[in-house]
Image (cartoon, helix red, strand yellow):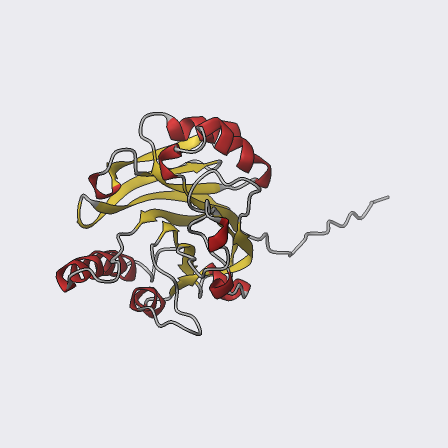
Length: 259
């Protein structure tokens, strides 16, 4: 007698997703690393890009509370200020660290690679300069040059790279009332903010200034997560609201999935 045994194999494709957050912590002025970690840990982020993070072991401390044991501290503090580093904490191993200069060491993108289900992603933690109204044109031109420098870096890599850019962009994205040339630079190379796919109306929210309740709904959404929309999609995401905010910025997050 021979027994026939049949094996059923699932053809269902395993999804590849990553939950990314970005948080300008204002050099931890209003809360300790442990307090920030406690406030965020239940949300199970895979990767958090911090800006204006203190140097030293601050990111290791906040990461240990959140269960994010892999950490990279950027080399250059933004604008040369004290304790305004771009750092990354992750539950996924990090490799391929690079500091991408935006013309000089005053502004850069801290870049690392992660791999999920054999898919490599490149995470950029950013903190852009900004040009307030009334500044001389030479100042505006300098900001434009720096942003364009990073955009050019990303453009050269979009054919082969799965880029996720997260942090304090210091600009409000193009919307019904505003055409933003900096945002459009990214759109032109295939990257866009998660808010568009999530249908979040940025004109009725704010990520700055979180410590002034009267600014709620001001339209100052200047913290973003960008990705190549032809390669990834945003399934979920939002601006993280707290009863008592721990920084002058609000954390933003997005759950991104490979298309």
